[in-house]
Length: 231
Image (cartoon, rainbow, N blue to C red):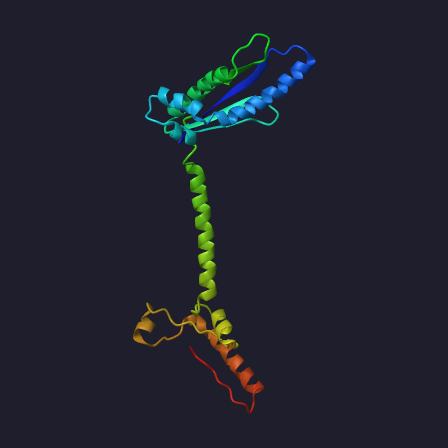
């Protein structure tokens, strides 16, 4: 969808004395607040629907048109949406013009009395950027959602995974001290293919560490049963 906005200034003429000027200012603020509701009524939207080239109804326009008043101002901001930028601008312009006619009917010109007038401050501008869908925002939101989901999945998998992949997993799972780790020989080496090499060349140091740990445990548990698990 595309959006167009137009601004209207509500003036009240005919006041001369300070008291009339004060009452006229208050009256103008009351009028502009009333027009916020009038914008979305059939009295305004039905003539607008009839004037538009597109096949729309007053009920359709009620969903496409909105109005607001900035704080402490007599400015009415009308916003319209459409399937194209041109349609949004056309609706906003038509509503603005019909609202002026509505005011002339409700507040007819009277000699010596206050007169409400709507002055167009800004013609509807055609904006080629759609308000929905906002692709950049959707892309960023999708990336963030994917990142959060990935973190959650990783955390859940880490908390529920019971497989043993590294030496620390053995100590954590069995609650026992790890005596040593021996790396098997590379299966692609000639010695491994002939069955003459079961351990990697770098395992000599690991074997010495394992022997030292076994001797230390045996000395510390003399006379007691000791179980060693090899996996």
